[in-house]
Length: 399
Image 1 (cartoon, rainbow, N blue to C red):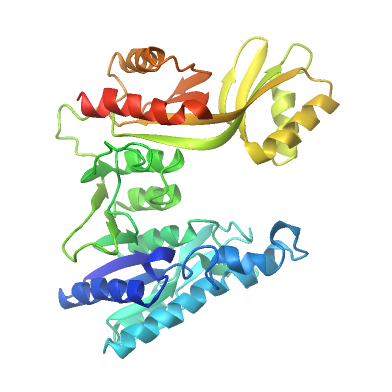
Image 2 (cartoon, rainbow, N blue to C red):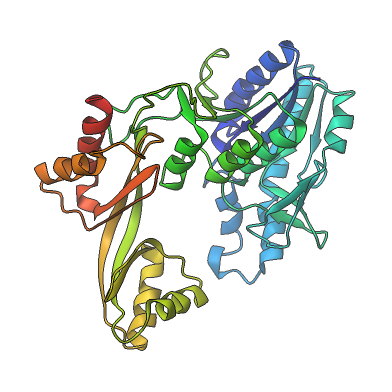
């Protein structure tokens, strides 16, 4: 039995016209001899009646009196509605199809409601359904907790559901359908010269996703990589034979792999510079962690630590540190720009090029750090557009 997993995001099922386009992709795959496991997100985005944010607005959002388990009862409904609606459309078009919510499809999770981890995917139900159906439509983003309640996987969880299904079912491929044609070398809204990427490695796309590229959730990429299941990032609106960006293992036979794959960015950061003369870095990080503040982009120096927080968490951190009389300086409205590429490691001169390119535009680098596939620089948000364009020109056009 040949199996394909196809995931359709909120914009791909937002209205009847979009759902018809999605159904065409399903039909094309069934006609090629595959059984298809379709994973759907909630219909539309904020403002659409059954989108996740719209459901949350019914109970005053963050001011709700509901606990995390009760919140999952609410937000899981969006995907269930989408599953039933899309299954109805397929049946009207003559497909043998059936619908399942996350627990029906065998997703078993931890008890961490709102951000549950999938412990197991029991595929018996889906495989039995495939005996009499060509298509099984599954509600993404959810599963059954150890306590026996509905639990959701956190934002972007439908991507993760699809990748986990691909691994559990031994699928030939997982197609992630969205409203863009695939991965680009940068955000095309900022970088007009951004180019389409036909092939990209798991590591590269995971890093791009972690650093702000919104095309796919990084957890889904990590799952696919562990199982060596190829992913394709595709547009629902493209032709049936337009296959988008292939995400797979890096081709080690390429001797000179590209040094830089793309430029990503993350908005809305505040940089903190905190003295450790009288209060150790360990105690400062413990203080922040105990108040559920997750720091990013960390540099530890002899007499201070430098780190970043999302803007909405910054005021909490400032008050905590001030109350403890810990000297702190902060710079708001920062953005982290990430230069991502599997070929960065061992390639001399990358950092020098970054510094040179930004210096020529008088863009001040507030902070920098690196890993074997990514170099990060922190700049002021007012410099974002110029920074990403000059770096894109330097690494992705000059090459």
